[in-house]
Length: 147
Image (tube, rainbow, N blue to C red; front, top):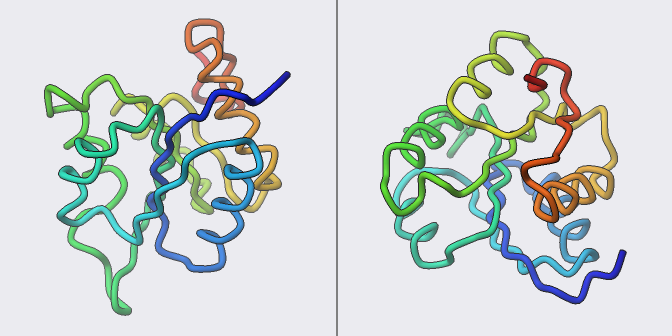
């Protein structure tokens, strides 16, 4: 598989260490990476401006030691309710493995859900690439995201 085509990704992740790991993994696969520490504004504006091919979304987003105004579910809902962002695929990358979180993400239109601690960042990035090369035929990694 050659990675000549540059894909654009926005990674919403509040943890600097994880930002670094994911950013490096996606850049290694020729992704043009934009990292946002939270999904508070200007989140939507940034998504509209960058027009990413895919978004990696954290679920629980902290900001200045507290919860950010908008968590990953609220951000996903906003994207789905906005005409020019509703078709951008979103994958959840989170250390929260509760089934209720996964079910809610799927219900809100996430394409897959990765438990961050269970996968190497390079494996996660590869799955995003596999998804983008064939969205229709994509087999979600998370059992609860399979139809």
